[in-house]
Every structure is written in C-alpha cells, then in structure tokens.
Amino acid sequence: MTPTLVLVSEHHSDTLREEFGRYARDYELRTARSSAEAIEVAEAVLADGGTIALFVTDSRLPDQPVLAAFHEWRRLVPTARRVIAAHWEHFITDAPGLRVGMATGKYDAYLLMPRGVRDEEFHNAITDLLSDWGSTAVDPEVVAVKIVSPAQDALTLGIRDYLDRMGMPSRVYDPDSEGGRFVRELLPDDVSYPLVYALNRPPIEARTVRDVAVAIYGAPEDFSIDQVVDVAVVGGGPAGLATAVYAASEGLSVVVLEAEAIGGQAGTSSMIRNYLGFPRGISGMRLAQRARNQALRFGTQFLTGWEVTSLEPGRDGAPHVVRTEGGAVAARSVVVSTGVAYRKLRVDPLEALVGTGVHYGAAMTAAREMEGADVYVVGGGNSAGQAAVHLARFARSVTILVRRPSLAETMSQYLIGEIDHNPRIEVRTCTEVVDGGGEGRLEWLCLEDTRSGERERVDAQGLFLLLGAEPHCDWLPPDVARDGRGFVLTGRDVPRDQWRDGLPPDNLATTLPGVFAAGDIRSGSMKRVASAAGEGASVVPLVHAWLAPEADGA
Image (cartoon, rainbow, N blue to C red; front, side):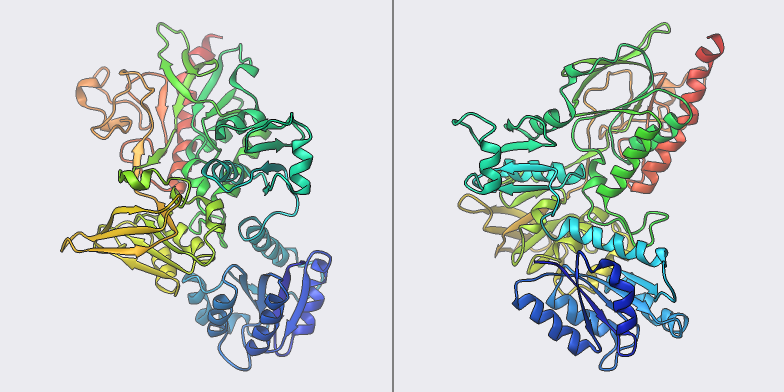
C-alpha cells in the first residue's frame, strides 16, 4: 500500500496539504486538526494494513501540547518520523520550549512552515527524513539486488546487511515466488541457497558475504594496478575516506583497499546526530557512501572485498607493497585506517547463535526483524546508544546492559537524553551476559549482577553486541610499533628508543617511514567519527611532505 503522510494543524491543515502536494504521487496525504483526530487517522491507516511514514504538525494543537501528542503518535507508530512545521507567527516564540524535545529524541526536526512556493530548504529536510524512513523501516520499492532464499538464515541476513551498508537496496524472495523463479531460471536446476542476482550481473550461489562483494565489484585478480600509486589507504571507514578525498583532490593517485563494506564500523550506525553540518543527523551508511562518491569524483580507486594480508616495507627508495589475497599494490606511502572490531563476548552457546538472533554491531537489517521482540544491547558507547534508539522503533523492549555504574563516562549526553526519554528503552548497569541459548535461534539470556553475583534468566529474541574496540592490524610488520593492546603508535607516543635523530615521528606518522595511521586504529584516538575524519584529512599534508623529496627530484 502507498505510505501515508499525516498533516496536523487546527488552522493551517489546508496550507500543509497544498505544500505537500508534490508528494501526492508517492504518498497518501491525510489531514487532521487535532492530536486526537491524528490518532484516529493513524489507527484507520493501520487497520487497513497501511504504513505511516511521517507526522507533520503545527507547533500548537487544540487538545494537548505537541510534545505530548508526539508521545502518543510514537507509541502508535514508532517507525514514523515526526516533524514540527511551526507557523511563522509562532516559529520564534515556540522554539525555546520545543527544541528541548528534539534534543531528547521526541521528534526529528523543527521547521518553519513554508510561506510560498519552492521552499526547497524545507523540502530538503522532508525528503531527508523520508529517505531515512524508506531505507530503515520498509522493504525498498526499487531493488538493486535480488536474494533468493527459503529462510532468513545467518548468511542471508549477513548478505543483506552488507548490501544495506553499501547503499544497495535488496529484497529476499522465496524460491517459489515470482522473483525467486525469475532468478532460478538463470541457473541450472540443482542449486544451493542463497542465490544473489546483483545489478544484472550473472547470479551466483553465495557461500560467503565476500562472494557477493566479488560478484558486484570484481575479484582482486580482476584488477591490474601496474603503476606505483602515491597513497594506498588500508580501510574504508571515516578516516580512510577522508584521506582519499583530500589526497585525491590534491592530485595524488589513491587506492583504497577495504575488506568489507565501505564505512567501517561507523557505516553501521543508524543515525549519527553529532556530526558537524548535519543538524537532523545522518546515517552512517549515507555518510560513507557520500564520502565514497566524493572520493571517486577526484579519481580514487576503490578495491572492495580485498583482505590485506601483509605489508612489505620499501627499502632504499623502493615503494611499500601492500599484499592481498589476490594481488598486490605498490605505494610510495601507506595510510593505515583499518579501524577496530567489536570484542567477542566469548560465551560459547551465544557465539553459536551469531546471525540467528545474536549480532555483533548494529546489524541494521536485523533490526527490522525485531518487531515485537525483547532485545538486549551490550555496550556503553555511542554505537550502542544509536543501536538501541534504532531498535526501539521495532522491538517491544530494548535493554542496554553495561558493566559500569552509569552511561555517563562512555556515551554522549545527547544519546543519554534520548534513551532516558524513550519508554521502550531500559538501562541495566553493573550487569553482564553470562549464558544464553535457544532451539536454532536466540530465545533466552542469563544475566549476572556484577556486584552481587545474582543471576536472572530472561526471554530474549535479539542480542546486539557492541563491546568496545579491538585493533585489526595483525598484518603489519614488526617495523610498525604498537602499544600493549595492539593499537598503532604515532608521534610522541612512540617510545624514545625508536625516535630518529632524537626526534619523534610526525603526529600521525608511525615508526616505519612512509607509513601513517589515522582513526580508531591509532593509539590514543578519540573513537569518534568526526575525529577519525579529521585525522584522515590531517594526514594528507604529512603524506605530501614524505613524497616531496621524490617530487623535487622528478
């Protein structure tokens, strides 16, 4: 059914309907003059099997305060986005009392009701929110990749999560459905599932997520990089993407090698609200894909699905060699931005259920499968908070579990505020998961109070593990110094006995000349998207300085 936009205003509903006329082709427009009437409209839409994408309301309603109305509407349709379009007579006077509600997640945007035609700033905000709703709440209308599978098993979910992170809308088809039969007819009769048909390329029988990456982007051996590049960036998260954009824009030849999905850990975030320049927030996937497209525009080459296995240091002016499973890249400089991986829970019965109710990271695709479920999120960082807020759109309940006595030490205040004001989210401090299980998928967890040792068994259909950072750089040679936890040392953090001529390396330089580190992999980094992107940009002048002697001699 066509999604619905509910427009609510006692005196200006006709104005809103006229302004939203441009959306009438793709959405049903329904108006209401009060909060109670909006609830009646929403209940009728839901009773008919429809969906509501967006509530848009005036800042003043006749029957209750608008923030109270949002509370009722969220209870009824938690996946819908919520916007205040304040009339120009009240926009400034109502703002101070209402913007507090936006900071705590009660609604998504505070806008000025358009005063004339073609108010594109207003509609840019609306389309951003509708795009976010469409990519997270419902199956896509336009499908780039067809997945054929008789069951939502761990591999099928992993493939779809990878595609979501790469910005490729996908849908799962039963083998006997029309879409399933279409793909099956392109292959021999005897096939094993899942099948993946991507972008009109030949369909494949996928054994791993990497099979899908190779089918879409090509295998390592399909590429030939004969020339020595200026910069090889290992890792396509925010730091690596920023390095690629700034280095390529300044004329350097750049290759980015990413083993998984572009965006790294940040790419799994449902909504990053504290990134500079995005007042309504931006999903990690969109931020990553915009940065990727920006880097491509300047000539960066991306090799997705390449697992880097080793780095051979260049000697006596020879380039460094970055080796992968299917080929090698020679580079005058290397920027290590591989980021971090989530630590393992190391509870064997739960490790056996990874992909079937247990997930490492936010697992955006899995969130849609949690409707009506009781879900637990383990972790106290921003990624865990963002995952909990997103899951609360679908799950009946979301419980955040942390070993610390509070979230204040590890999570941004804006997220703590959203969590405090979300009735579906509970925080349990001084608690850890010690056991769990189920028949074929997660059904229960055992929680332990770290102070008393008391244990409790709870029903659970989802467990999302965001347990903190472990470095991912075992492929680096011993020439690159690391701290006791395995993070790369740079600048003055390098031990004095490894300084050269009594001087430490430059701020983002490692102990191996011509090799730099940026982002979460670097010892002492802030573990924030903005700081990782800043380091990625800041490393480029150091790369230039390293390459300068060679450029001068050319």
